Amino acid sequence: MKLPIGERQTVAEGTERVVFGLSGKKFPFIAGQHLQVAVSKLLYPDPRGRSRVFSIASSPGETDKIAITFRFDSQKGSGFKRTLLELPLGSLVEIEGPFGYFTLPDDLNQSVVFIAGGIGITPFLSMIRFAEETRRPGAITLLYANRAEASAAFLAELRERDARNTNFSLKNKFGPLGADFVRQSVANPDQVLWYVAGPGAMVSLARQILFDLHIPPAHLFTEEFEGY
Image (cartoon, rainbow, N blue to C red; front, side, top):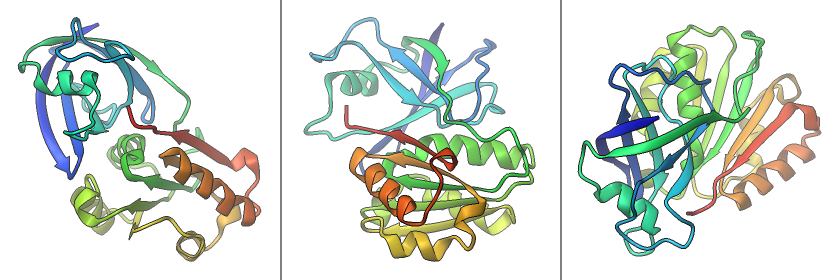
């Protein structure tokens, strides 16, 4: 499916948002899934080629657009990302998908805890938005860890949702994810499903913390985001 680049925005320090307009086309997906984006030609060389996979940040209820977010370092960013950020608005890109099973449980009453490190917030943002739109009854707790407030993408939106939605709770931390932060944030860790997304080192740390809390492997779902 070819879609135009409709909007670009810096949403936090080192984090970019790109929106593709659906223009009446349909792209059904489940919150938490990802897609592949390909450009017809790179403006800058990239040894990994002209396509990448991104989690979808928008909600399935936003039927007029699809949004992605990603980290971007202006000094070390890949040729692909640089191309995506410099193509003229309206340029067509190829979208394939959706893919993936990192999604909310079928049981709408099941409480879940999300642990997001940095750009790992992306699939959770889609789930949180969709859960509020559809009035999902199960509680969602988000543990959101970032280096600093300036690099915490969508923090203002998440704080607003926390204030108005009794089924959503935000607990954010600036600095490394720690065992005490996780333990103190969730009262009944054995009664919820755990989802973890972020850089590989952070996901590994979260796995160890949850292992020490005796969380069954069947109650843990993870997705790693590496720099690209």
